[in-house]
Image (cartoon, rainbow, N blue to C red; front, side):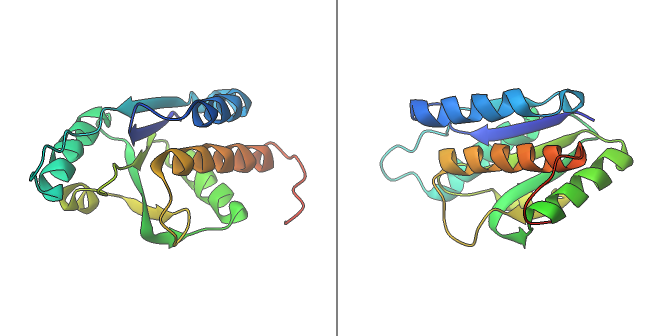
Amino acid sequence: MRIRLIAVGQRLPSWIDAGCAEYVKRLPREWNFELIALKAAARPEGKPAAAAMQAEGRAIAAAIPPGSRRVLLDERGRQLTTAQLTGRLTHWQQDGRDVALVVGGADGLDPELRNMADETLALSQMTLPHGLARLLLVEQLYRAGSLLQGHPYHRV
């Protein structure tokens, strides 16, 4: 199984990039993890948010390889504990498809992209800066991967 994190936003604070890089190094090798950072759509004065979401949605859809499980991250999605995320990862591995985890841009995710999702998960009901959401997601993947490899976890 290959896991791709497709995220809108290329210019993030260095501490976000450093944190993501650190956790990516710790992920299970068999996941063949890849972070794909897409450029945010330009929002000239007066351009509606829907147009930006639509442009970003097209870029995201183009970055998702055919046949991949599409898992969108959105505050209205299903919230999981770390142990439940571990269970989802086990299910995804058994499913045999690659996984595309998607973090949208500042305006959110295009409704057409939402309709194409296999699952929608939430990191929190709170609105998170997209860089922080990216870091939090990679850290949780690391934790779930640790559990799958049999490392002890204090909450299980």
